[in-house]
Length: 553
Image (cartoon, rainbow, N blue to C red; front, side, top):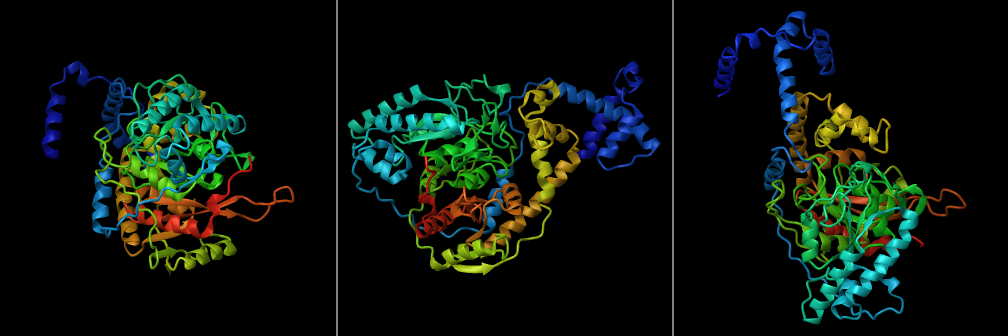
């Protein structure tokens, strides 16, 4: 087939008019030599001369392809999700029976703002019993979110009219005896890379602050169907990096002198501070887990392809994931069940569904840990002691030695492609952060990655994914620091899921700061094993109660 293709190309070349065949290539020898150096290759003068015409023709082809309009939402044909599915089939999960959650019988508080830190089952019980109306709860959260945003800078667009109209509809349905489920009437926030009809979708950048997309992202549609009330588009670090956006730096509600980390900066800060019941964030490499650690929220980074990304900004098509951020693992699980599942508008999204497991018996689960990985021996002991109280089987393991960090070439190349036009037009100069570790510079670097090296990295990625699939085959979970760099990179590349929960505070930093930085742990495991990880994390929270603390404001 390949020989035939080259033969056809040769015949076409022979058919070109004589003047075209004789035209001198516009590409200089030294330019070509320099390009070879970037690729780590040294060509002889003869080789360079032979290459000149073909490379010049490639450059002309690049320009013609650039003239073909491609919105950010147009994905390359990748099929990584099919590979993830194949990996998952190597280690089938044993079925588990989910346990229905009970709605507590709670009285209406005198001050409704007390509900801003209540969990989903409590709020659902109050809404279903009509002790609190959807409009009342929505107005309460809108007021609180507006107030805390003055300090936290976590809101890009407040959706007051949309929210109150939706809340009124949800109250009308309750009056008619229709209750949509646990999320009926509960206010939430969307990271502002999710399209919402009738509102700007800014991607955190001044370049796109006037961008209005005439669609609702699939996760927005599914939460609408579940009865949840979208009250705000929340901040993200510009184009999904960090916590700095065109409106400033989103702050950590525990310590407003520092940023909330990112790029799901607004979702983490607003959730931790009681501005929303939950939020939807996104992760390509750390953007859910890192701000969750900084702000002390419980989150799920799901298996690649479990949640639809239709209507979400693309950064790296083969790595992007959407997941819930909440104040407890139980809450995050309830939300994931509402948004997960196949979507014909996202070809990388699976047919697999997620069912909230509810409270589970986690005794005898096999939980691995890497000795010394927590850095602080006392913290590591506390984590392991808490797990021992759950009667799990702790196993001392070692991580596979793999070139995971070198595979970040994949993210860089895909991100540079997603924002190729921004770089070529020079509008990358308008982005807020113009430093070495920021998108403008990284997008430019991405233009130097040879296609051959990108494809080689993806071939190595296949091997890494298979190794981690086999690694998790003998474990129900691996417990580790939330943002342990090796795992953060590797598992975002392989598509394996992680859940993260707060784990108290570190040592006091000074007399003025009696508590140190927030600490956190993560549980990672097999592909599509979210329910098992959630059950373990929920049992951890029942035993430790770290998640019940909230910022003092």
